[in-house]
Length: 245
Image (cartoon, rainbow, N blue to C red; front, side, top):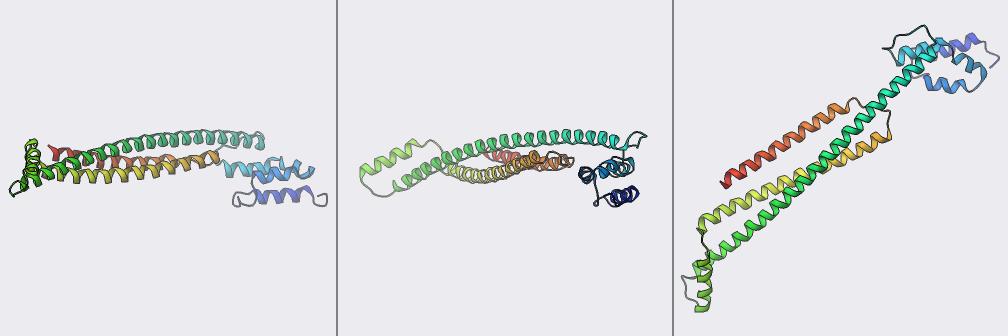
């Protein structure tokens, strides 16, 4: 180190820290160089190289007359605090999205369960009506009296118009199946979004100093997509209620 004069080392550090070559030398490299020897420790604290880092890393900061290294440290601490706050906001946004997705998955699971129960009830009633129709047809042919009596009892216990009620139940079964398919797809999509949000949260927690300013726009697009799917489900439910009426 003693072979080269300070002016040459200053020129080397200046070339490495100029604005148009940010990949050659950064503040981390300079701090690492400062612990290698006394000469580089002394030269790395001078203002000429830190002014270059100030203009490249914090272009919006106004260069003051005080120590450039101290000013860089102050700007770095402020920037670190901003990144920490942005990270905290990003974590809160993702946690909120996870909670909303979990609530939505629970609602869809409950709606799916109710729709399956409704389908089972409609299918059971439809099966009973078909038995009534078969019994009424069988009364027109000869058969043992005990069998005829049982079939007559089945027919007499039915108090609704078999034909019209069967048509209504057929339509209800079809609508229930459509609703079940829609709820199941929505639940699977929501579970996929929930898993993606959990993975994103793990990544955010692992990288606390990453730039998270773009997360808000992406979450807004996902929110719009979720709202559109909710509107489709509401429209489907409204059509079903209208058909029942």
